[in-house]
Image (cartoon, rainbow, N blue to C red):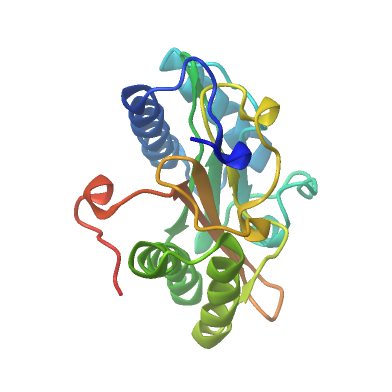
Amino acid sequence: MNNPAERVGPAFSVQGMEQARAETRRAIAAIAARVRPGMVEEDAVEMAREVIRSQGHALSWHPTRVRFGRNTMKPMKKASEPAVVLGENDIFFIDIAPRVAHWEGDGGASFVVGAAPEQARCAADAETLFHEVRAVWRDHEWTGRQLYDFAARRAREMGWELNPELPGHRVSDFPHATLHTGSLADYPESPSNMRWILEIHLTDPQGRFGAFFEDMLLGDSAYGGHPATQ
């Protein structure tokens, strides 16, 4: 591949990247299953780290995050408010980046406990919007900039705001930062398969909560029962 923004390292392989993605999604599910109302956010983060280590993976190249309630509004680079407790009817999200052998995993998803219908809609919309963006990439070969312009417009139509501070990024064999550090939202070409992480962080206009979903930008076959919707 001649495009310097989409270069990969010497250990890159399709099988390796698929394995890293599968292990990341497996860890997300395992972490979510252990989260309970009454937990303190910091304890959930340490539990998430232990889950990743128990799978045999390094914590790797960005912090392990589990965010509860009002902390789900915050951009990833801003620290959580300390000692937030997950309520009985609440939302949380997981954002992890394990290093699986030579390859980078990166994934995130949102979950709701109890009866929290607005939060549940936000969580569902974050994943839906991820797949809507993926669909226009699949069908129209839009640039990264066009994809995020579309995402921001659709987020407002859904009743949310798209956080511009999570603009997507490269992923590769470790470490991708030696190859390219620019964001997907600034990428002036159509992104290639298995090179980028598409991030969707929706926030409530009233500032109460947010929801997050991210995964590798891939074709429909990678998503099983959730194909792109356009």
